Every structure is written in C-alpha cells, then in structure tokens.
Length: 464
Image (cartoon, rainbow, N blue to C red; front, side, top):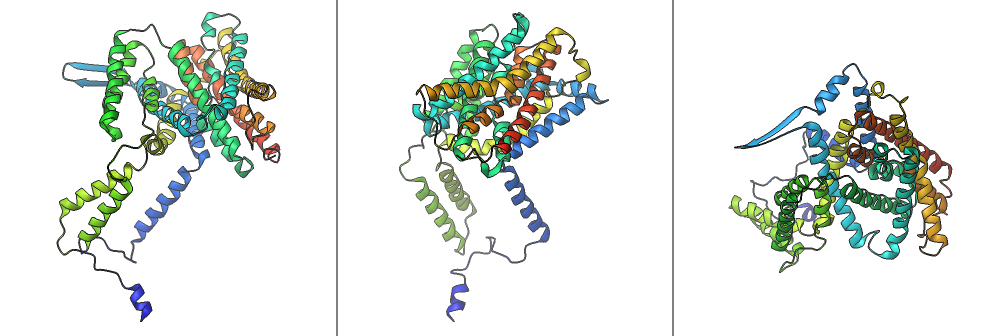
C-alpha cells in the first residue's frame, strides 16, 4: 500500500502540458543520444585545435589542387550591402578577417576581463610571473626575426608575426598529454597566452594601424558612450549591444585602426557584476516556475500568462551570472568551431608553387618566422621565467616545475591564428605574405609535435 502511494503522481497535470512518457520514438532517442555525445566531444579542449588543424589542411590542399583558382575566387568574391542611397562593397575575405574575427577578439577581451577580475591576472603576485614569461616570449622571437631581416625595412615590418600564441591550439595540445599535466601548469600556459594576446592587440593598435583619420574617433567615441549608457540603463541582452558595437567598429575602421579592436574594447567593458535587483534572481525564477506549476495543475490554462512567467524565469536565470562569466561559454563554441576554422580556411591556403623561396626576401621571412617561433618562444619564456625567479622578483607557482616551464615555452611557439592575422597586416606583398604563412604553419606544426614528444618524455617530472 505504501509503495503504491509513493509511485502515484502528486497531482494531475493539465492535458495541455506534456507528461512523462515511457514510449519515446526511436529516432528521437537516437537524436538525443547523438546530441549528448556531440556535446561531450565539443567540451574536449583538444577538439577545437583538431578542427582548426583540419581547416588549415583543407585550405592547403585546396590551394595546391587543380582547383586552386577557385580558392582565390571564393575568398575574394564580392559582397555588397545596400540600404537606400548607402552602399558598402567589399569581399568575403574582408568579412572573415575584419568582421567575423571581431567576435574572436570579443571573446579574447572578455577572457582578459575575467582573468583580471578574479583569475590568473587578478593580483600582482599571481600575474607577475606569467607577465614576465610573456614579455620574454615576445621580445626574444621579435629579436630573432629582426636578426634574420638584417636591416631590410620591408622585411622588418614582420617583426611582430612570431610574438603571439594561439590559445586554442596550445591549450588543446597540452590537453592531449592527459592527466600528467598538473592544473597549475595549464593555468600558467593560459595566463601567458592571454598576456600574449594583450601584447598582440597593443602591437596591432600601435604598429599596424594606418595613418589615422581623426574624424573616425568621434564615431568610435559615440559607440563607447552608447555602451556605457546601455550598461548604466541595465541593458542585459547581448543582442542589443550590436548597435553600439557596430558604431564602435565603424568608427575604428574610419580612423584607420584595425576594426577588430572593437571586439577587445567591448570585451574589456563587459560587466563583471550582477545587475542590481530588488530581489534575488534565484527567488524570482523559483516563484515564476511555481506559478507555472500552479497553472499546469489548473483546469484553465492561460497561454499568455504562461509565456509571461516563463519569460520572467528565463530572464532571472540569465541574470544569475554576470555577463563576463555568462557570455564566453555561449560564444566559445561558435568561435572555436566556426569563426576560427573559417579564418584558417580563408587564410592558410598557401600556394607552394607560387612562393619563390630561392629569392632572399621570402626565404628570410619564412626562416625568420619559423626560427623565432620554434626557438625564440621557448628560449624567451624559459629565460624570462628563470631570471624572474632567481632574482626574487617572482615566485614559481606551486605545482609548476622547470620541465613544465620548458613545455609551456615550446607550446607557446604555436602561433597560427594570431600570427597569420598579424602577418596579413604586416605584408601587402603576396610573396612575402605567403612566405610568412609557410613559416607560421611549419613552425606551429613543429612546435606542437616537439611539445607533445617532450611532454610525453618528461610527464613524470611535470608533477614534481
């Protein structure tokens, strides 16, 4: 009798609401199972790096196939936006590099903001060693490249190409080493890569922006004011920030600065605090769902009222997390499995037959970039870390060993996305740009393989 009472439903749910069923269609079960497996696969850190590698491989095969001309034609296909008397004409390559990549930089900006708020960059003690390591990892590769360029002003413009680290690739390769990698070492690599990105953004802003048109700063300033106004008004919907974000992007484009910097600015301005509210959002959500439950058990269902209560619950659920913590996980899959692979597909297609490496210019660029990434990054990261620790300026984090620092330095040599991006800004001459890409791709692959082999060889020493 007691067992029967326990299994009985507490109350009758109105027929308009879906009730639990033991007879789930097989196709629905298969779909649900596939989506669960896909979700688990997408959560694997190494997966985004693998997808990025596949995109780069497809680009290389396509650009060196009998259909190579279609690769060029595809990414330079014209795009036009016309609204009444206003018309903007560009090509698909510009859309990928200057529009889609703004989303990538938005996520980078939010990650920097989050780490500054309560992460690896939240205090001087935590951030000092990754900052020193990143400075070494930027300075030494730049100096190695400059030594290769030997005073040629055109070639010297590529000095910043080997200074950046691809976060997705580097962290993904580190994840392939499995449980032998201690958590503090992963945080050290992540912090170093984020600081690398900060430096790369500053380099783009100060060294790779054309002659500035100051009229554009007025437009960009209006965009910034709109962002601040929206924050002050408590506007929480991310979609509504497209308006001030577009104004900021357009203003930076007009100035001659690279418009993707708008993403970094928006990311750094993303609120880290919850919106002020008279009641706790968890209480608001619970009460709204309780009212939905009452309606579900009632004989008369008011659909409009239910929509209202569910909207209240969804809004409260959204506001349980500050935007800087809520938005990156939502955007990350789109960036990792959409924006970055498309960028790789559009930019990694180097036509090997079209690059004359017997000429001094392209050969110097390719070798300089490759040597700076494969050798300069680990040397710079290790030397800067060693000097900072030995002089007492910084302390080695608990759980990070010297073999681990060497491993981080080697993986920091995976430049890829950011390096290709900077290369496109550094060289307008096709031969030099293609040579830079060859150096980046070869060096990134070499750094990844060497990092994996070294990490596997010293996996026992990473823990002690």
